[in-house]
Image (tube, rainbow, N blue to C red; front, side, top):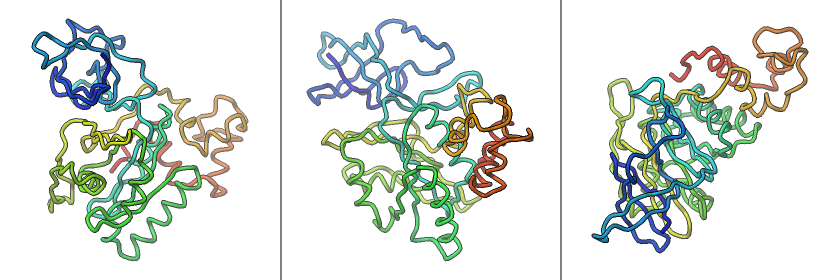
Amino acid sequence: MNGLILKSVGSWYDILCENKQLYKGRLKGKFKLDDKKLTNPIAVGDTVSFEIEENQQTVVIDKIGDRLNYIIRKSAHKTEHSHIIAANIDEAFLVVTLVSPQTSTGFIDRFLVSAESFRIPVSIIFNKIDLYDSKSTHYQEELIEIYQSIGYNYFTVSAEKNIGVEPLVKYMKGKKILISGHSGVGKSTLMNRISPILNLKTLPVSNFANKGVHTTTFAEMFDLGNDTFLIDTPGIKEFGLVEMEKYEISHFFPEMRALIGTCKFNTCLHKNEPGCAVQNAVSAGTISSSRYKSYLSMLENDDNRK
């Protein structure tokens, strides 16, 4: 039989069968990882084949289907390892807030670059617009202009006040959507608005340092019906780039990718080389300075996510 991984906790997996029946499953014997530097052999969103055990309540997974794509981060516990957050994603929703707490452009850009590297489209969801003053609204407009100009879709919502959620729900139909962002940006509140039957736990942003409080500790996929799935993820503090060489990073900035082959040197890293088309574009204002700063920080492996 075949199924879809909805949740992974320890060595057990929640599996949604093709007939919509739910099973608890485990791996058959010792499962060998093709990539020894991955912490998890199976991720939420994976398709698997399995055999039902004699008790009819649990199953044994014997095969993992090929992945169309996946999104990955560095392991929080094993520095040389990576952890697959989710697989076979149609689109990612990156929830950001400009107040309470503020999401940095460095964090946004790192997420977008990682998603680009795995060919996962991203929509940026600006949440908590009910808290914006004129300064925050103006800043949001600037960010929208930057990201829309390079091809990113966006939505503006207030999950708390149920503003702008309905267009989001319509947009999601028939897709597997991963929802992510820093702790405290309102992912759980937004998910409850998208599908009230989820009834996910929510907590207010901590007054100390204006940081979010973790309410999600592992990735989980929810079946919303009509072939629509929503993947909840833990609030991500550290989103490191993996499987990426320095010369590749600019390829995952759409505005820089458009200039490939136009620099004086084909080995150009767009830092201080003469005849660099990217640096010229930054000077001319056709590539935003914030995006270029994000690129340089990734190139030097600096942390610009604060």
